[in-house]
Length: 113
Image 1 (cartoon, rainbow, N blue to C red):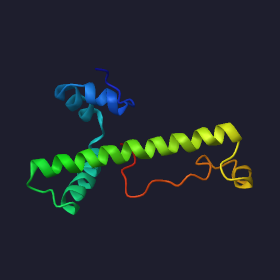
Image 2 (tube, rainbow, N blue to C red):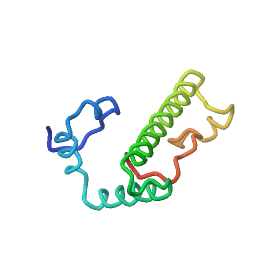
Image 3 (spheres, helix red, strand yellow):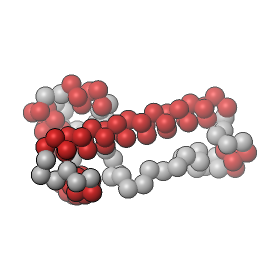
Image 4 (cartoon, one colour):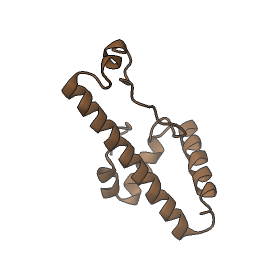
């Protein structure tokens, strides 16, 4: 495993062993690890899954699915933008310096997942 943290798809991460996942986690800066752990624990508590492995697995599965769905939605919108040159009529041209191309930014999520 390399000493640099790089992007991995969900499928790639699922194929890794627990040891490989732990090695990747160690490459995440400590302050970011703490932030992710805080967000994770808040999700667990908010969903009443604290103290139950089965409920915690359900919450984690839902979080992963939400992440996958969000990325599919963004990719679909970006594909529409590439095909038409803009997302919403003239708005795409007006905001040509906006790297989001009018896409909504995610809220209540860590900087990088």
